[in-house]
Length: 320
Image 1: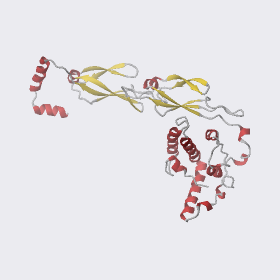
Image 2: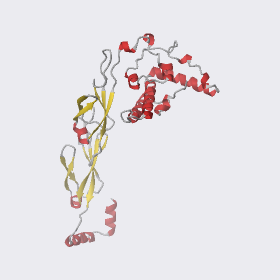
Image 3: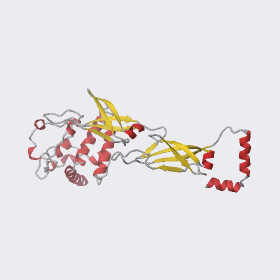
């Protein structure tokens, strides 16, 4: 039997934290999910391998046992032992000292179609404790969780929205809360696959992808944009209208504003996903717009203006 390196499968170090394991698993699961790769057998196989690795490394007891096995396996290899001669019996899940608390695999086996590797079944297949002989069919299974990718606009992420979805034979109206971002997972309880033997349905998870916006860039709960400012307002000061995702606001421009100056409009960014009363900020970069198609009189006036300052003063002002 072949030893499986679950850390390598998820692309994490052996000392990885649970948060790092969870992050790596979610990234790979989204990449190789069958819904994203319909009919691609290699992606399906990779998806099963990723879920199997996560099933072990996300469970402290399974991970402890797996790490002990890994150390023994590596020591056996260093001694030059034939991999076919390794004694797997002491690590089989039915052996005394390696049982412990009851562990139910729940919807994972539904997701994988019961297709765990021989390695997994040998090491972890009997960790259900003294009731391991009690059939899963008799206990029933909770329904399988389902995932659905959903694209929304930045405006919809700002104010929240509702969508009609076709999930298998059902039509569902789902609510997307304000503040979601690309990568957010919205849980719709009880709208996943059906359970068996009286067990409840699984959940539906919406995987959110917020589309790029033509005016705003988003970084967390903050928004960034530019404001075109005519030369005269930049020099003399004034006000310009700045769009937000709700309405326009007037931004006061101080005299002698330089191009690239950044203004902060507090509380005009995105709502916080976990507390919609909290808002990010809107950052506005000044973009100076020079006049074009000058008349002869306008050119004469700019020439007169240029003569009022020495070249050194003009250079100094440009550097400030």
